[in-house]
Image (cartoon, rainbow over the protein chains, first blue to last red):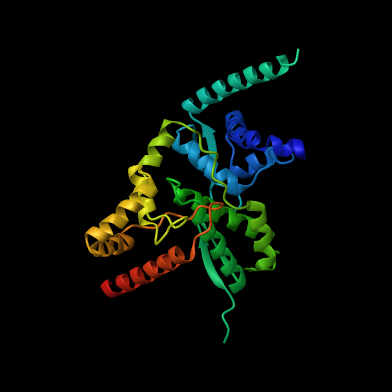
Length: 107
Length: 191
């Protein structure tokens, strides 16, 4: 518990990175993202995801298309823009560097 | 006669709610809207949330059930969770937004209504220095500055309350209530 709370701000900051990763893998709608994160350290809720996706869309990192669904109203399917893909690659790279740094410390 | 249910249009869905569930829903959406104050595009997020509520409630209805009650709404809202705004990235954009804030009154830590604090925040001045200057003006103008203060109090909107900051003292709370009361009266008189 203590460890979890110590890294809480990092987890919060990483959520955006993870959402970009999920959206980058294939076009998804919000329940897909929630399911993908459920049970991980990054379990989240719609109340958190919608504001985040709205911000990412404003920053032109993600886009959405409306798709008809068999049950209920059309759904918003999100995908990465070119800028989003570039950002994801840069974040991936940076995250790898951080991991290396952490692994190298203490030797 | 008793009203059984209200029909609610939630983004692209329409559902029936009983009175208690409707009140709870209104409350949730109002709370979400206030949490999104300052977001550049709250309407999009609110529509998404409305849709999420509709989907979650519809999923919880029994096949023979047409009206959403608290039994469906409460767990639905729990699953959706309250609005969390994304961690703001610290950058130059952030800095310009902070300085381009409109003139507002700040109730937290105010002495009268928060006009001095609002002016100090807007112009980047020391609030204590500004208050001393205001008291000097009061003496020089023989109280005329009171009218100016009163006018600004009616004109400047109140900054949204920041949770976790210092509590509001008695006079600022009363001033705020009084101002809001007056504004309501004035808008009623003009409309």
